[in-house]
Image (tube, rainbow, N blue to C red; front, top):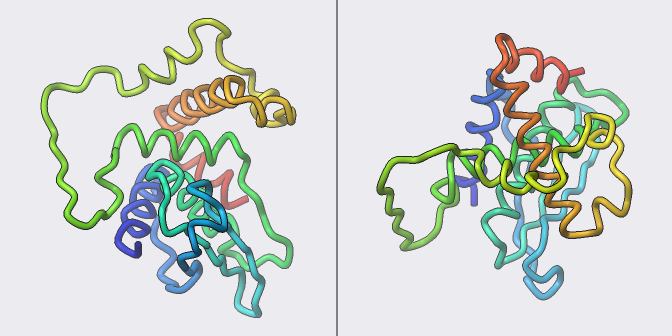
Length: 192
């Protein structure tokens, strides 16, 4: 799990042009029984200490690799946003968490996740890496920035609407990262 977390951290920080914190132990990973959460998302518990925030991340024993990438991306962005040791927890927007994790899943793939006895076969030329996101938006179109920034509960609870939310977040995040100086500006927005 530590190898997977380091790979995902490196992927997030590379996209933002950020340096590793240099301070180990800002987030702690621990396994939780699968029957407690099923194979769903991770449990992230932020805790404040004298020297700043630490994040305890509960990971089900069995978890889909996409949930793992998504949860660890979120905790890495949280750690980045809270490096200054503010007394109140700084949260990153859901669209950024979903957009960044979606980009990492698309560009890095399953090879980020260390699996025992896993083999990765890479073949052929890759086309547009964002085709799935674009395809998900063909009928309804992308959400506006306002809709991404303040999602309605119905958008988050309905599978089809959440898929549209995620696809819109991926495209927005990719666009922001591809702009000249985009990674630095996005990193600065996270750092506050």
